[in-house]
Image (cartoon, rainbow, N blue to C red; front, side):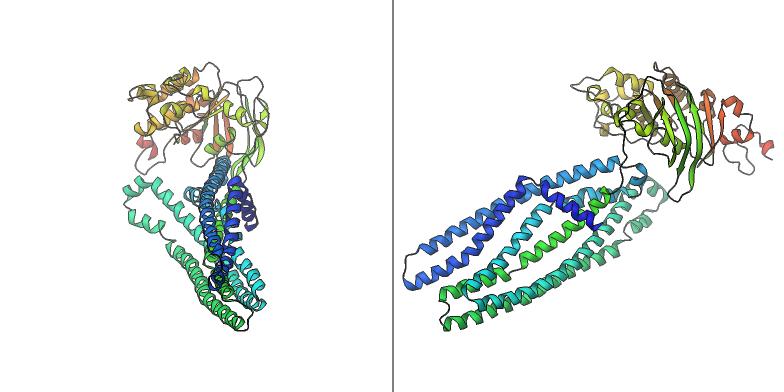
Length: 582
């Protein structure tokens, strides 16, 4: 993964565009001005001692102005380029995360993914500025060696030995700090993931009275976080201490060697002054340490972003659907869990165009997995799913989403307003705009039996979602209205489990009366829903145990048991006399 992280780091450098070039030019010009300043000051000292014209002090003042101006420009370019790079990385990562196969996305906690998107993308976004400033931070040291060499080779040798020692110390810092920062960000991601889970289940935690235990669970990795954080800051402090110890000794050595050269007549007082300034400039590696620390964090952030980008995304074909009304064929479909256990095992199923098929079975029989495969929320490990004769894998993204609609048991509502929630995934012209609500959104809301609720809201369909508190059933119906755009296949995965019987009957009638007679697959636990379907697919242990009309399957006592709650000693299942249990 470091290789992928380094590759992403190189890409991120280019994301800053022209601002990275401006930063490089400003930083380079500023570094050159800093290198010329000691020489100008030395010449100014000699000019003052010799009674010459004060041109060198003026030149030194001009170099100070250049340093201030380039530092200001570099700050502007660094901030703007970093913001641009961070935005591009976040857009790239967000697009990738939303395109992931749900199985791969589920392997990482939501909080961890958010941490990578918000925190580590921002760290990696500093790549351009960090690399440019890191390179220019080396220039004072390298330039000081050259300047001292021009003054007196003895000074250059003395200074070079000191720099070599500092470079060895900095290399150890870079290695240790990089590992510590990567481990720190990893633990931070785990804590964020647990926190997201806790916030999502806050009502359950409160009802169970396990707040204290949940806090302990979320914060359990804190000792590891503290350990890695301590490693990071200890490594940084050790590097700073080494620099603080070596740098003054190096300057003293330069003063000693330079003083000897003055007494020997090889240097003037002004050149000695310049040599001391170059020693201070070149040995002042605090900026280098800070830049290396920034580079460590940037690299660690890039590695974590690259790890998320390495997850495989779902690919789409280019095919479109021929004329048809939703003929569905499953051939040898097998789906396995991550541990290799078959969730669906060799499913062969044919659903005629326009038919309603109910999917029933005990908990864990694979009903939701079948619904996911049929609409390509998940690809089968083996086998094929065809809609009107075209394999789902070959369909383009737009063709698939226009043909298939999903209603979930616990839908997530996305959009600023009620109208935007219902219109999600459709062409822009179908969404509400300029205070006007398209008729098809109203029709969908009416079919989902949510229209009366929406019309009672202060601004109707234009009411903001956060201003429309909803029950579980109302949320389900709004999610169902969103799914009714489907032209070929409508999949309802327990999508009406939270509504009352009368409302469910109204919804069923509206869906059945759809003019296009699209195919409907309904995952259900209710006997009334199965009874009104054209076909029933009976799943048991991931296998298709039976396909037929409800009244024919009803003759099998095992099928009837699917709709009955587990028997409790001394009590009868619904609709069964107590005597029958006894």
